[in-house]
Amino acid sequence: MRKSDFNIRKVMLCIADAVIIALCGIVANFILQTLGFKTGFISIMDTPYVIVSILINVIVCVSMLFLSGAYSKMWRYFNIRDYLTCVVGMIMGIVLSTLILSLRYNTFRFVLPYTIISGVLATSGVVLFRLIFKTAFITINDAGTIDAGERTLIVGCGNAGKIILTDIYTARKDINNESRNLFPVGFVDDDIRKQNTNVNGIRVIGSTHDIPNICKEQNISLIIFAIPSCSEEERQRILELCSKTSCRIKIVPYLSRILFDNNKVELLHQTKEIKIEDLLGREPITFDKKSVAKLVKGKVCMVTGGGGSIGSELVRQIAKYKPKQVVIVDIYENNAYDIQQELVIEYEDSLNLKTVIASVRDYDKMEQVFREFKPDLVWHAAAHKHVPLMETVPCEAVKNNVFGTYNVARLAQKYGVKKFVMISTDKAVNPTNVMGATKRCCEMIVQLMSNTTKGTEFVTTRFGNVLGSNGSVIPLFRRQIESGKPITVTHPDIIRYFMTIPEAVSLVLQAAGMAKGGEIFVLDMGAPVKITSLAENLCRLYGKVPYKDVEIKFTGLRPGEKLFEELLMDEEGLKKTENSKIFIGNQINVNREELLSGLEKLRVCSENNDDKQAVELLAELVPTFHHQTN
Image (cartoon, rainbow, N blue to C red; front, side, top):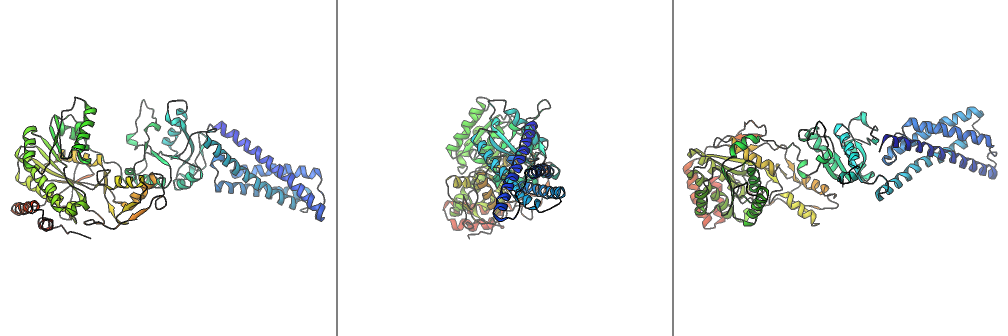
């Protein structure tokens, strides 16, 4: 709305109030005449007195409404506090006009009854008019005849918020611009100096703490978060408030990611839909792409488990750095086919891509693959990782995770691979489940290979849960919400560290560039996230109220599951790297003879499918393994 439009409406509101006060004066006069005629309480009031009293009431009350700020608020923004402002203004006007009339006629006999009745009627009329008009205004607006568009609340009225507002007005001139249908209802901002001020006719109607109430009162359907420079802690707090509403949420990118063109910036088209990872409580991890490009360019890169959530993202990112060849190895042909077709479409003939259907458990087949492609770099992402399932089939976890890793690591050594990077997990730290114990065993194998190999750099990367990966909680929660079923959380207090798939893969790639051999790279993933809060926020992002629209059911800890995960074992310590978010855990000495002997026993046991003994042997190999069966 333009400022001139707002001034016109302000004058119209003043006129409306004057008419209401005058009419109420006439009604009050009629009531008093009626009472005087029937009861003799008062004489019939003369016309000059009525005219003078009405004029004084109108002038004084409208003036007090103006001074109280009733006309600085736009009709569609009115809330309870604004109605109270009108009441206060009217009371001030009534009291003052009563004093003036009393002095004029030197008596309270006629003045007091008249001003009380007219004052009550006029105050009720002024408030009721605003309430009725606001309701009618919103109804007409929703019908699309006035100020049509998606009712939008802008969070932050700084430079970014002002640019957003300008972009919305500009978009209305472009019939092909989807943003032309946005209707800015107001701003919220925590700067007390900005409260009740106007930006191009759009008022600051509250602070960020008021977001849930404002969205409900004003029928908001879209929130644009326009504070790109705020701290991550503040960003998380505000986004959590936004997620308590049923509104769609869009956010302006971080300040460093805003795109400028000829010293001009259009933010509206740069906003993005909020995702659950925006609530993790930290900024996205950044990495040195130059080091990755130097590592990958012109190399033959092999990714085992290349069709999985981590493996496929590895392949995507590796493909960007002009490798000599990319070799996808996966036993599940559907996933392998999907990523193959995606890359064929993306790169056409510019990427030398080979896809091999094979299991890392098959040493002979994997040797054939190594012999044919002679990889320079190997990322080993193939693994069974589902904790509860692996509790039921420990021998399968051993065969795939432990001996799959052992096979690929030995072949990397045999065929002179320059770097071998194994994907591990925080569940390998003080493991309480079979999956974690097998991954810890894999770390020990990689460290052993590093100690006994020259020419190949063996390295482990360890991180927490990955948002959206196969088997993670987010896809499960989404399926449950979309199917109308309860969200299942194992325990109300369970917490986990989370990162996004691109972050996890960027860590893996940069770790390979940093690797000198034997390191365990660990990502500082910020504060842990409570799974219950994650479930609640996901409900809100679907526009649903947790525990009301969607039930959250607590099912109890599963076999091998613990309330919290650790990222580092006590004896590993931490060393900083050039990236402030990446640390290196000191290598733990591994007794070669004991490890090889234990692996041989474990091999025989797993081939005999003796699950009970497999768990016992894992405990011997991994002293920190304390199996929880719950």
